[in-house]
Amino acid sequence: MDLLEKLTILSDAAKYDAACTSSGAKRSYQVGKIGNTSSSIAGCCHSFSADGRCITLLKVLMTNSCVYDCKYCVNRRSNETKRAAFTPKELAELTIEFYRRNYIEGLFLSSGVLRNPDYTTEQMIRALRILRHDYAFNGYIHAKAIPGTSPELVTELGLLADRLSVNVELPSEAGLQSLAPDKTKAAILRPMGQIRDSVVQSKAELVKYRHAPSFAPAGQSTQLIVGATADSDRHILHLTESLYQRFRLKRVFYSAYVPVVENTLLPSPDTKPPLLREHRLYQADWLLRFYGFRAEELLTEEQPDFNPLIDPKCSWAIGHLEQFPVEITTADYETLLRVPGIGPVGAKRIVSARRVSHLRFEDLQKLGVVLKRAQFFITCGGRIRSGLRFSASTLVHQLETIQRGELPPDGTMAQLSLFDTAG
Image 1 (cartoon, one colour):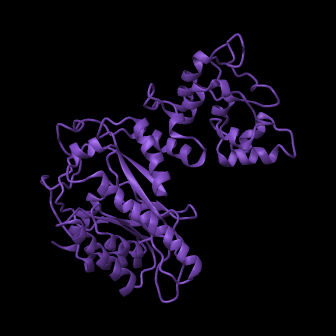
Image 2 (cartoon, rainbow, N blue to C red):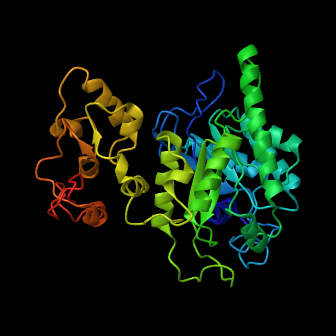
């Protein structure tokens, strides 16, 4: 099998892994080495650099052969698919040639489990060692740590890569037992804990010793598959919150399950991937990370799933109308962050602008506020927006139609105001 055919098979097999990012890595230019993580070039797989620019990575598997039989995976051992594997030398040469041709900025390397986790990880380490040492490649590398790999090999992998990730995959232990019997919760969480501790230790050593080796400077991430099991959004969000707090993850990625194999325990092959649900989970994830929300605030046992037609922040606001309206001219920063349509940048601008001038509704859009959503939940100078008409009973429908782009931005629809005591 020639190299091009291998690349076709192994890049296609890698497309279901969503945990691909380079955010947070700042590997600058070094004399005698090629590549860095600061420039943006065209290539294979889009990702983002630490400064927010779009960059590209070569996203491949070391091999799609696997001793595991995870029922949701196209590369499982019982699935009849064409198998291929790169040698460490082939993968290193392919990566460096793609970089020299200006196709890519870095490498995202994952793998099926060939023989066992340690053997597979050794192959990945050999490839990365050739890249780093023989070719002096200084660009971005994201590597997947395979559950069950020995701690010594995880350490070596982290010293060669900018970011590591261990995929949780299924949100519950019951899901793992039924769909991925070869994996266990303990085997997945153990390397995540080791990576967390090693990153902390590496940062402490770099403070004392300038040239100390850096372990996974861009931290770690993980991926959760959404829709393969019956786990609710509430369960997934609580798991996400726990992962951020316990393992200091940089990102949790959500991947809508794509029915690529047939199994009675999985959704039927004609089921559409829950892409909108995935999108709502990403929005809720953002609220956890940057808006000060907690998982228990966003979903309850009575309402365990998000309304797919309204973003999670609007859903929360509708369920807590007693906290609204918020007066723009006096509310503190944390309160402003809770208003739909106002983000961290907009909230900071409002707090800054109102110190020097009297704010009007017309000014809010200039400050970055999404007024078509925020207008229902704010007052400016003690007044609601001129011409706005709605009631508590029509608010959900109005927000749904606004998010579908069907309702005029002024929200005109009903006769009563939400903040009218009679309404």
